[in-house]
Length: 259
Image (tube, rainbow, N blue to C red; front, top):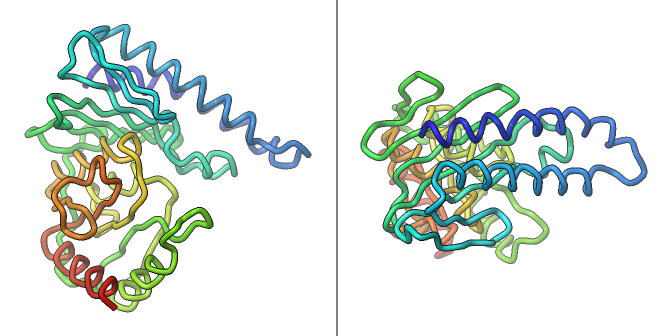
């Protein structure tokens, strides 16, 4: 965890400076896209260098889908240099660095670092979840009518928009509100911190959600696929909430998909 936190903080220093330049680029004719792509690539390389310098035998999987097996084929870094790239590109300070360690097929350590508010969410398997030095627990709400739920909301690239809109209508009619913050890593961290009562979404990659899944679990959330399946990491299909809200969300999603 020390290695992960030090890498995230070092990589974030330049990333924060880059973010400060985005506002100026918004009014330029070329826009910020190439600049943000360069910031993402630079942060990706810095994280990889720092993590492998500390643990040279580990494998890795990065946000561009590149992966490699190290000499220690049981351990693999899974990381995303900017989770919430669209937010970053538009000057919205809601994005995070996400780093997880997978050991023998199981996530055993994870952090989600939001550099603008300086919030370090972190967890180790069996040791609980934390925000900086404060222990985290999921929200205790039992009634979905009181619950604030996070999700991804439809995007033009989604193939399942019609089905997804049906799920949104079903859940929105029952809960206190639905939010999209634009970062799946932070969605899960917010469940761990009790800021969201639950989240559901599909279409994510392991580097988006690996660290967040462990955070949510260690804070007491029930974590599954959105159809109730047991293994969301490589399915990219997640449902996370406390035991009461999880069961209610699962029933609503299942009914919406049948209808």
